[in-house]
Length: 94
Image (tube, rainbow, N blue to C red):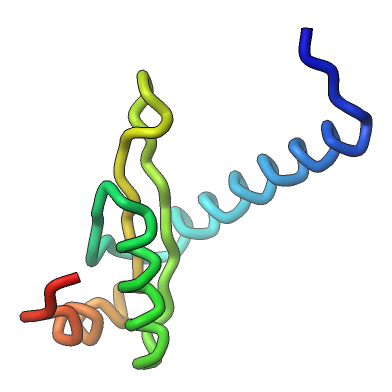
């Protein structure tokens, strides 16, 4: 049986609540996916690149329901910055 301290349990609950809150913020706003990849680090590189050019970004992980380690990470940007992001990414190989 796995045992957790109260602090560890509280931290896990707080992290889960933060993820739910972040996801609801993204879903409430007008955001669009401009890049996705199975490797999280590739999406992080693209996010950093766009942020250097003034484009906001949020990475949403979409794990496979059967295998948590498999899945896809998606980079979302506000719809009003989507054209800029698309233009910046066009012709680049990440």
